[in-house]
Image 1: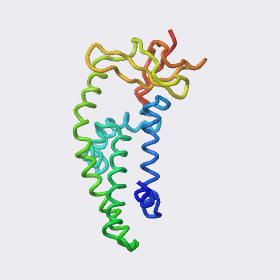
Image 2: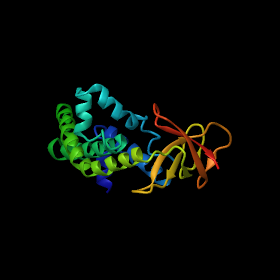
Image 3: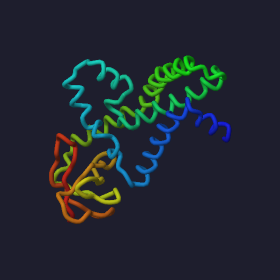
Image 4: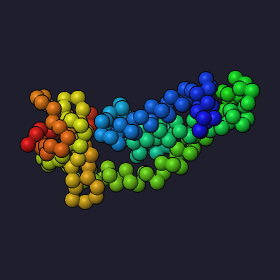
Length: 207
């Protein structure tokens, strides 16, 4: 473990080590409920479908499709990619570049990206049908007019998540906001008032 840490913090590995650390921190706070899955996702997941429809077969859309980012949440895809690149880069420099030649470091980094993209596609493939089903259920049963329970720490004007039970499938996790007033704490039942299609955000109020 000590040797792994020493390799991970070497200057040529440190940037990817920091990136992997940030992604791990993100998933930890998501699990703890401090942040929602959409908090650091820059609202890209909700816009990908529209981008695909408008951009057709552009290189960007083709790249997103290749790594399954049009179906699997972007943060999950980037997490897989960063971990694969980190592991390949460290192992490549450790075994193939003990002298830490700068040009070899760059070649290994490029190779780690290419291999990481392929491995990310393989790793996210089993998640595609799961997230497609979740999207179908969300579209099949509109949330507006229903009720849910706050699962984030709070819901206020800037952030919040609400869980809404479905007749079929798993509960839906909705990104929500309030129109003002006191923050709504975790565990409170709320009414889902409206939906902003441009942002993917639901407006809720306390019952």
